[in-house]
Length: 269
Ligand code: BTN
Image (cartoon, rainbow, N blue to C red; front, side, top):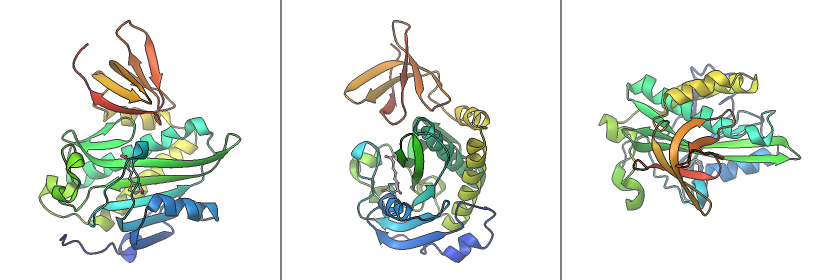
């Protein structure tokens, strides 16, 4: 059993410096999925910046229709945003969120973090965080976005399913101690808000530049599985819309949109 105390709302709020993210927070002991709940709340008008946190999820959702194991002790949350962005700009939110998580971890614990396109944060090549975004757009206009974040915080690796465990880590495992989740959330919300203001204010380039500085995969040979297709090549860049650019063996360039792919390192071609 984790020793972690449940997350206390007052402790997050007491020193929170944000104007938007986390001004309204709902904490639950157990939900099916914070993303599903946030979507319902956004549909009936929840304010931008509203955060939903759960101690555990019984039906956590990962990318590509995978299940997301969410044992107690982790940080499972969704944030409702209402950006004036068109559909093609939504992947930028994934990049800014992974950057915010990576920076929070490195600032608080002095651990070296890496972002992995499109939506992961790694420590020592193992996944500590995944991000899943749901966008509600109509006619090119974004009504709301739910940014779902799962962080393996105070969890033992053996509380994760076997197939996940092999490539996963947790903050507790890396630090050999439990972390203060309220302090973590406070800093995370502050960083997210900073990058969000930049992004929505038309200043995404510096955010992308910072993201790329933490991206270990650029310059490596990768294999991207996108729908039915496997694409192998040299990952050379991520463009302003969050698409991965790969140079294929014949020298041609391919763009893979961030919603479509999952990535792994491959041997040189
Ligand atoms: C992935 O890497 O596949 C994305 C995982 C996203 C998990 C988070 S946990 C909080 C939120 N609620 C969900 O059901 N999923 C996201």
